[in-house]
Length: 167
Image 1 (cartoon, one colour):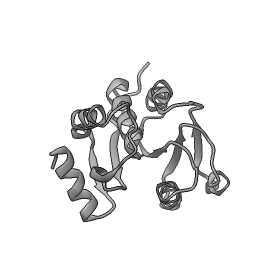
Image 2 (tube, one colour):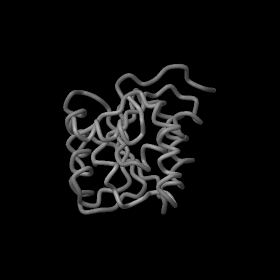
Image 3 (cartoon, helix red, strand yellow):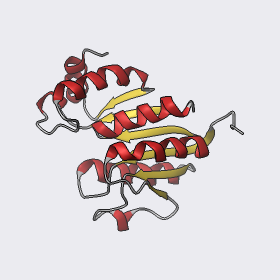
Image 4 (tube, one colour):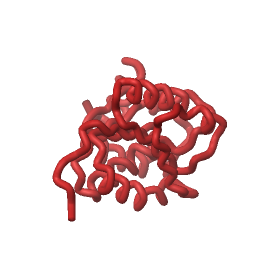
């Protein structure tokens, strides 16, 4: 039986791993801040690996999807959304954004997905999908479904908007 509402006190954060980096560190800080503010916080990882793993604050629920690739997190993330029904899912890094937006749509759960843009996307040389045009096309298709798109700076937000032609 499907539950109708969302858990208003649950916030989920999703990032591939906790291998050291700025996005990973900021997600740990966000998790700790939300937890201290009284929210139940789930930190969802493709794989529970990385040097920051031991720094996950007490009280944060770690959800390890045990996936070798981001695409393989999709079934587990859909199950998670249906079971836990978080109020918000904050996704970090481009492929994680795409997976989170697809999972939210497929799950039928009205969780608000917030995507965080950390890099000047037009200058990135690493592609998460086989080619940049496929990645860009999926982003243009899916990002308008996001509840919010948050850039770490005005410059990053402006570059993102110009690159994808989205507000």
